[in-house]
Image 1 (tube, rainbow, N blue to C red):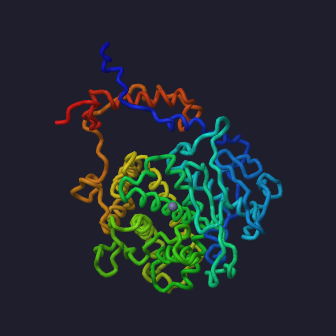
Image 2: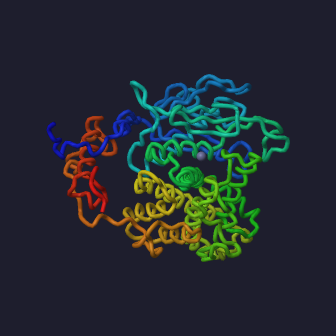
Image 3: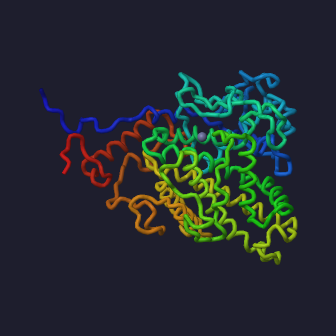
Length: 511
Ligand SMILES: [Zn+2]
């Protein structure tokens, strides 16, 4: 038998997922069409009064819609609705709805549920697209022909939960009857629908998007993997909240009236978190607080874990949801630190000691300035958190690796760290004992990924050789995607580069 030349041994395989990107058909907006479609949504869920910003008008990226709504990315289904929510598909392109920012939020109107999931799913997708600069392909099986959409079932099943299923190809939201003493404005034994909870929708959509970016993160190879999926999904939901400036504005006005002297953002986080927890007694996985509010540090504090007032720390024995909440609290604390650094000057200009927030009256321009700043920083954190996924290992994720990814991703984009985003992240992760492996110092240069010692050039992936479909974020077709993957596979498995990538040839002797 002839010996197979080494060069023809298959040393890598190309996943079917590589070509799946081409099945995505993002909407191509005609320049004459509007940029956004304003839609009214519940900013938390219907149990919250307007006091905390119960409704908001959000700007969903514009696309032409079919009745459903069915757009380029999501296919919202109206079937299985329980009485009295039974409804047909919703036509958001109806001129009357276009003129009135969609339907007025009301839990008793089945069509509002369709609008709510469409709006929040689209906003979550838009946050990912903005952060990564490209379209994200779903991990679900694509249809035989036509665009690859994710099915969304606002009336998925009876139950106190919601879920994303790669096999089922859908996001499914449960509904159930409240207990005898429900929270907020919920009616006794009334119907509670997870499809009206902003955070549940954003959380589940994030699971689907993260699965599209890192499919092996659904494989629990260590305790951190599941914790990361949960914590990351909560982070996206939380920061998306803070990006709605008018919601934050209303909450600041309220905090001023009701504050007990705690800091502004902890108050907000507490309100958001408690509302979510209270809405469903029994701590179900769906509506739950993601923040260890009590453990969030005072401004630039260095209280050590274990000490009085210290945070809940990393512990591999924790349940994945709790472990995920340690991650959420770490990132949220860094967010608060940066917001405080940036808003300090507004208080000083207004002649108010920042610590006296809640006791001193705040002028309207000050409220607006504080809310605007908090929303801007939230948008930046949202983008940093999402962009870091591109810097995460493909499998076997650890929470410490996420810190490394955050620091590297942000450092690549923002050379100077004027407001100390990265320093705040390292500090709050350290306070919770989350460290990347093999790191001796919690400093930026020690934490960030290092480039390989030897530079590797892959001519097939040089920018001038890439083929796009108009936009550099959009590859031209499946052939081009396969060509790019093959070029990468060849370069990685080339014996000349094996050492750089720390790979070993099949059959090679290990020393
Ligand atoms: Zn989840």
